[in-house]
Image (cartoon, rainbow, N blue to C red; front, side, top):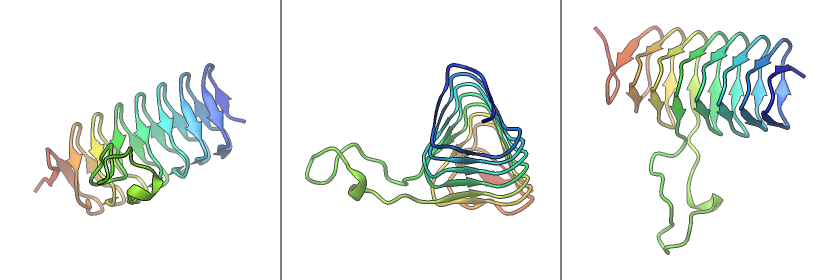
Length: 157
C-alpha cells in the first residue's frame, strides 16, 4: 500500500513501489507505477494507467482509456475526456448507457508535460517529451518534443 493521506477512496488499484497519494483522491480499478505522486482532489478511473516517476497535480481527472507513460507531469486541474461527442441522452431520449458511446483511448508518452488547466480530448497521443501549455485544448495528436498552446492547441514554431 502506498503512503496515503486520509480520507481517500482507493478501490482495486495496482500500485507500484513508493507511490504517494495525497488526501481526497478517488482511485479505482487503475494502475499507478513506482514512485509516482498523486495530488489532492485527483480522480483516476477504472482502466486508466499511470507510469513510474510521474507527478499528477491536484484537481486532475484521468478517465478510463488514458495511458500515461513514465516521467510524465500532469499539472493542476487537467481534464481528460474519452468521448468526442458526449451526450446525456441517446437518440431515443433515454439517459446514455455503456452501449451508447465509444471510449476513445488517449496516450501520453514518456516524459511529456501537460500544463495546468489543459483539456485533452479522447483519441489523441501526446508524444514523448512534448509540452502542452497551460489551458490548452488538445484535439489532435501532439508530435514528440513539440510544444502546443491555445484552443485548439497549435504547435509553436
